[in-house]
Image 1 (cartoon, rainbow, N blue to C red):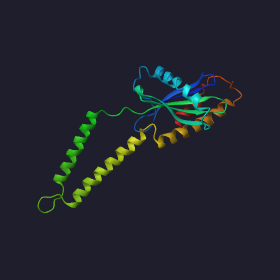
Image 2 (cartoon, one colour):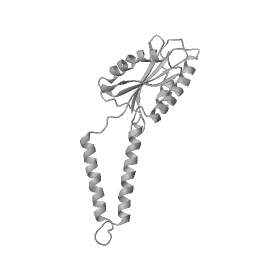
Image 3 (cartoon, rainbow, N blue to C red):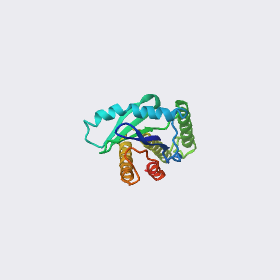
Image 4 (spheres, helix red, strand yellow):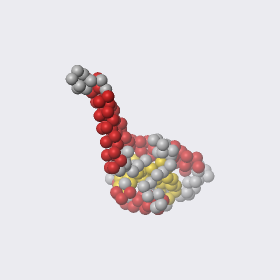
Amino acid sequence: MSYYFTILSPTDVPLFSVAFGTSKAGGYGVARFRYPDTARYMNQFIVHASLDIVEELQWTNGAMYLKHIDTYPPNSAYISAFLTGSGARFLLLHQPPQPASSTTAAAAGTTSTTSASTTTTSGATAPGGAPSLAASMSITSSSSTSSSRASSSSIANNPTSPQTEEAIRQFMNEVYENWAKTVMSPFYRRGMEITSPVFKGSCTAS
């Protein structure tokens, strides 16, 4: 999963922005957007285009975390928003990894079927040449495990699932705490861009 996070002032002035990726599944915290050549500009465009929705929801939704508010289908980009008491907006663009092609999936399915067939043929057989009960249960167990893993993977990559919403809510709350500490610093002036590497590190580590 790749992310672009930005903080906007009440007058829509960018105060902070950072792009990062998940550290799970070999992501190493690096953002891998689908169109890397134009991602820097498109992410800003997509995020700012969702501000109209944020302004509508802030008068009808009393919560600080507005959840998923907008989607940009061409890039498979999803926007989540968080409002602060001072009027600053936190916007998070999250993009799931590009799904494997149908050809690859089909090839994987063929390989899995062939392996299962080979296991059945080479496994223990009952009198008369039929597969034994142990061999049949082994194949069923293997199939169930693969299905469970695929289901878990699809949930993790679903930007609108309850698990994802909860993870983003926790991220927004942690960033909000760090942001409050930053703006309360005597060296910070209201409306000034946040350049602290410590704050940036806390965002990418949340």
